[in-house]
Amino acid sequence: MRLALPHLEPVLMLNVGKEIEKDTAVIIDAGRPTVTGIGQERRLADLLQATRDIDRRFLDKVGRFPVEIVVRYDEIAPFRARRIRLLHEAASRILRGDEPRPRNALRVAYSQDEFARLQHELFRLYAEEVRSLSRSVRLPGPLVPLREMIARELLDVMLRVAWPLAREIATFAWRDAPAGPTSHHDDATA
Image 1 (cartoon, rainbow, N blue to C red):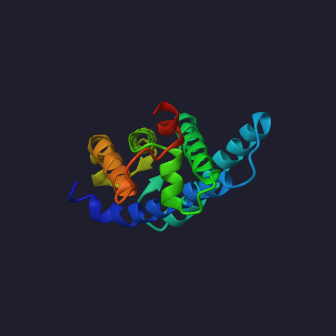
Image 2: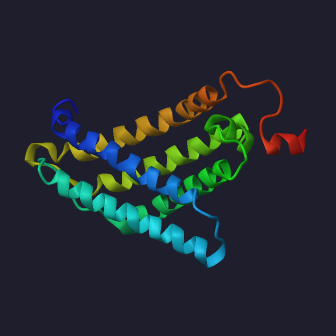
């Protein structure tokens, strides 16, 4: 693993930027006027295609590094489509409210526990996508045997930290929150 990391670190940094770009596209789209039915499905399909375009630009940049990646979209599409849908629905739910402050809008849309569960599911889906993508990475000669070990270790780490990280994010978002119910869901059940 230590031998491979120096070769992969620049690629991993580019990958973080790529994922931020994808999530940003989904969140911006969620702020557009609401559509339903076929219109909504078309928008989600367009977002899925946009993520492929972002991937293509990433792969063009990665061409400079000693790593070849051939993305198998048939394997990752179900995980990615589900993740896009969940993120889009969550962002729409948060952005549709009357609260102009993002943290308060989040608190109105979700309870802390609901938000932690949402984050956990997004992390889990991303981990599954990464696992599928690991088969797309072609490493140079001496690193080839390490690919499966690296992929397994990465998946294990991602899944192990998903729930604690989701809870930590939710705790941070609710830090300094006023006492009492903070979401419409909580109000309806109180």
